[in-house]
Amino acid sequence: MTKSIVIVGGGTAGWMTAAYLKVTFRDSLSITLVESANVPTIGVGEATFSTVRRYFQHLGLDEREWMPECDATYKLAIRFEDWRADGHYFYHPFERPRVVEGFSLADWWLHARPSDRFDQDTAVLAALCDNLRSPRYLDGTMLERDFVVPDEDRLSRAGFEGDTQFPYAFHFDAAKLAGYLTEFGVRRGVQHVLDDVVEVVHGDRGAIDGIRTREHGIISGDLFIDCTGFKALLLNKALGVPFQSYQQYLPNDSAVALRVPTDMATNGIRPCTTATARDAGWIWTIPLYRRIGTGYVYSSEYCGPDEAEQSLRRFVGARAEGLEANHIRMRIGRSESSWVKNCVAIGLSSGFVEPLESTGIFFIQNAIEQLVKHFPSGEDDDLLREAYNQQVAHVMDGVRDFLVLHYYAAARQDNQYWKDAKTRPLPDSLAERIELWKAKLPDESTVFPYFHGFEPYSYAVMLLGLGGLPVRPLPALANLDASAARREFELVREQGQILVDRLPSQYEYFAHLRDPG
Ligand code: FAD
Image 1: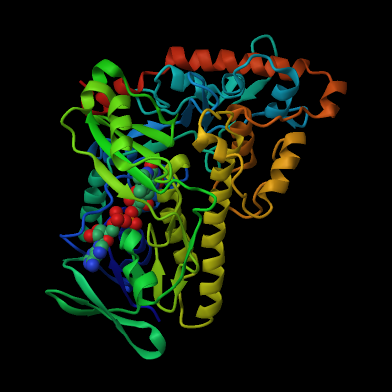
Image 2: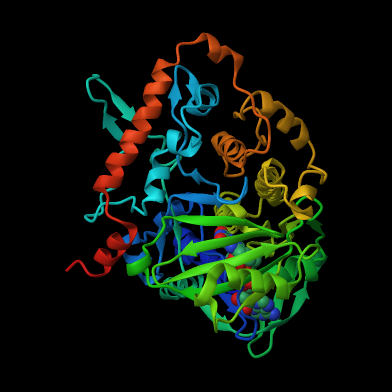
């Protein structure tokens, strides 16, 4: 029986894991978290995916309480700028295209081309992003999903649903969230040890018996969770589990980040993460309540750290003056197995892909939920481990493929970096899928076949937004009456406008939450 857990590392992964396991297992499990005061956390990782809502719900945390504490904001989409050509942008929203006459509105769009803005024609959230709206009214009510169609006796429904496709995720200050979860975990009985792990003590058959700390001696446990970040001190270093790099497919291996204080009352808060293509990668912009988190993700093959920092400072402008830059070397790929013997790696120690679709915290959440589902009971633990490892590997491999598509399908080809993105080898079977997607937009039977967080619609949105691959409409649509689809395109635009007119701005929403007056 597993009765005691030792988590090493107090970044987002360590504290998310400690809080979730404590809430799940209560006092039947003792949890100790050891973190070093000398090794800083990565300090970035502030945009999430809409499933993260489930994590906070499990902890019983009300977003009206934790969001202001963590300077959090809503994220309805990712805005991709300059991936097709300078000045072009489109959204990848948390909203599925609707279905009309049995075909996705994405297929109808390709056939009918009602405008040159696929996102605006198929997603109400695109209008909300353009107009800096909040997805909630000042009284906390969610934006409408159902609209009565004028002069027609029916409802028209936006493509987001309660549990499966929720219309928003969060941005938050990573340090504040870690602090919030620390307090949450400690209040519920997580033992917090501030110390350096200096050695991993092996027991029978190579499992981990304990960790030797500088000042607290050896700390023993039944199960050890490695949340030591890119170092992966327990899984990769002590147990020698190999790491599989994805770098041949995704060459970005470096980042430089800035925290930019910003007056949101004047500038407003855009309810999306922005990913702006640059000469050797792309720049993220994450708007929080009091500042912007921004960083340049780039490949060191094409750009040095000084040049990257200068590009980022130019991009930010005068507000970047005097700010300290955080340079980060990224390890892209995954551990061959994330759970070996009595050690599970969660977070950067398990695996990571560049944050283009904000998947780092999603990987953590997935790993924690899967650990709970595969929790070792003393019987059939080998089978549980094996099943866990497969699921976690599939999630990361699937996201890798989706990200590779971003570069391959981007129309931008103005320098060697973007030209090379079109000729790099593709992961197994992705090349075949891409050929098929040119003739038929992705659906459930042609995307990566295991759960990895992205639905087929996300692939279609990226193909249509990135604009670099010749995708063709379905011949069958030429023989069908397109009037219902055309009406739905108009309705999406009308409903988007209604919401823009009714909803408060994102800044107003959070200012009101802090001070209802
Ligand atoms: P870390 O934050 O590195 O924490 C490691 C911990 O281990 C620290 O507490 C440290 O003190 C401890 N430690 C290390 N050695 C020892 C030792 N010897 N003894 C004791 N303790 C030790 N994810 C997203 O979801 N969205 C994003 O937008 C996003 N952007 C990112 C941008 C970049 C450039 C990078 C690199 C990552 C990004 N991520 C993002 C990923 C996200 O930041 C991480 O998944 C998340 O922060 C979890 O990190 P971690 O806790 O695994 O590691």
